[in-house]
Image (cartoon, rainbow, N blue to C red; front, side, top):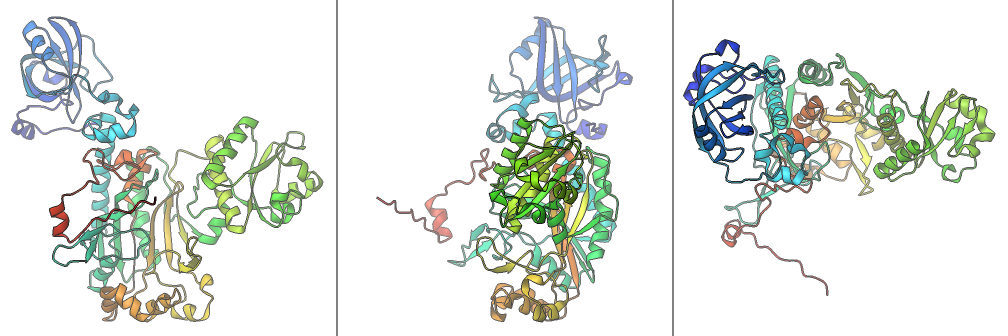
Length: 598
């Protein structure tokens, strides 16, 4: 990471150069540097080599007098220092440092900020090796690690480029409210009690969904913002609890294809410019209908770098005599030229079971064309039919999932991903593979409720409009909804919006909500649409997830300046925290402890 500081700015801050700036052409100059005392290699009481580190890089300081060595000995690592001295050429150059051709011979050392502790919670350059809670508690030290800091600098550059690209496409940046009303977006709200309105609450926005649609109804043509969103949900590797940011955008008089065109123009150059992989999908991205994605990949977030495809093996294996297959849907993944060991296969099956809570079954067609291993004995009588149905070649490994239709599909999707990650040859890892998942069902049966619910966004336009809502079975209705997926990670959901009040009411009636419910839950949007709203569409790719992919990090917390831990705690600031009784009275809140059962 190379960042230069202009000399004018440097002098304003009491320094002539930053710690990554000096080169051979500066030899002989008197300079002033400021930064952190990184480390000292002490040779004797009047000779040592100190490394000074600032935001921009590192410079070696050669201590050659007892007086200055005594000053350095009196302070701890990570103290901040001002060094005044002469630049000279190093006799033993360090090609690993950008300033490795020079060193500073100090004439004056001033302690600007003293580190009070002899021992740090972790070594700065090795902070990523510490446990996560320690890193988060001392995040201000963790961020001093150049490798950690670089991810935050990268994030800043990406956000700046996203903003420039959107403005270049004639989008206007508009900020929307943070304190708003509770809205059914699909996750739990963070509630904020009102001081002036006892018993009533604001909610932090799960997304600026309604506001950006209202902007379209207000006559704005193209809106965007780097929007903060707040959802009270559990953490995952690709999801931060509490808050996250998204590139929120909306377009008036726009179709699904208009949104696709903008995203396909904005994102690939940024991934190509900053990504650890240099191969990026070119426009147009592959469009995959939802049902096809589930059938071929076992997931609506398929990783297209994987060249394995799910096959249906129900017809040929459901009656093979293996009890877990009887009367069930059976899905198969075929990996050709397979060289994995039995131990590796068992490990893969165990990992799939951890993720999916379902078992994986398997067999192999060996180099002699014989069925071996796993459940092969149940397949022997159907050998020729199975080979033909699955297109098997010698040295093929077959992994199988069974259960009801959806369970078998989803388990096969987990197998596909796990197999490709564990065994070489089935994934082109060094690439960014984008795709659009389209044609989502408008409705689904909720896994928890068992009742008809909106599948995605309740404000989406059904394909076929009001006629489809009136004539089709709810589960057969498709919506103009779409997901943007990259490398198996959902970056965003979007939709063509339902801007017609009559269609909106009908759509909500199907899930048991009447006209009065719609007016009560979404009064501003419903009323605004009654005054004539344009057709509009939008999307909101997650900034955190994009940066995580671009940086090649597996945890989203690595690219967030001050993330919460897995249990939504800020261990550095001590949040969430108790508040005093006066604060509670101000907002009309009383804490009632649950009675413990005896």
